[in-house]
Amino acid sequence: MADDGSDDAGGIDESDDPDPDSNRDLDPDTETAAPPRLVEPGASTADERRLVAGWQGRYFEDFRVGDVYKHPYGRTVTETDNVWLTNLTMNLNPMHFNEPYAAATEFGERLVDGTFVIALAVGMSVIDVSANATANLGYDRIRHHAPVFHGDTIFAESEVLDKRESSSREHVGIVTTELRAYNQDDELVLSMERTPMVLKRSHARPSAARPTGWPDGVGTQPEDVEGRVDERPGQEDS
Image (cartoon, rainbow, N blue to C red):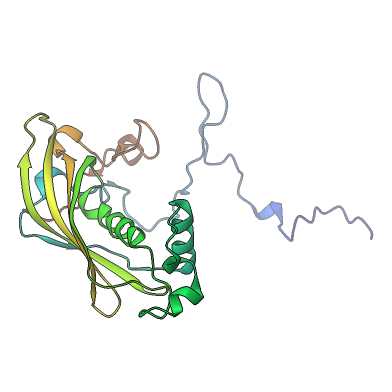
């Protein structure tokens, strides 16, 4: 094939590409290109850019006795979930891994390991209850109200039963919730109380530039958006 002098790189004509260094400023000390600003000038229709605080979880001050949080995202339980958890925990009850055995029982099929249902419901509640917990103090009054089968979809909600100050740690408080899990048919399959120790907002001092878990100076900073920062934490009014 004749070489016509063009560089065919997957059909991309580099002559139409913007200068890769066009949006870079030279570092005055090293005279090298600074990291590029990924949003090209004029690419956004916004009049101005802002740094806005996202959902950072509830802090102790945000909980109110009687509030119910319906946790987002249901989760469909698969056979893989059940087999892996059963193997990992060395659960030797054949109800979880022996289909002919389980088929001969009153349930007619294998049951999902109850400890998986507990772990799933607790995990689903973290976004609303314990994203800012420093420890889980206890799981109490655990009840399996109905079996869970492969293919069931689980939904969870938490109700705040109690909150109190810690007698030994000023930077946290103690919150007790009832966690309830339902299947797709609105059948209650699990209930339990759990009590995490939750950071106080006044101690954690989260910000839009440094949310929980982020180190200082990483990602977009207030100076990158000319100081336009919305620190509203996304919590409901108390």
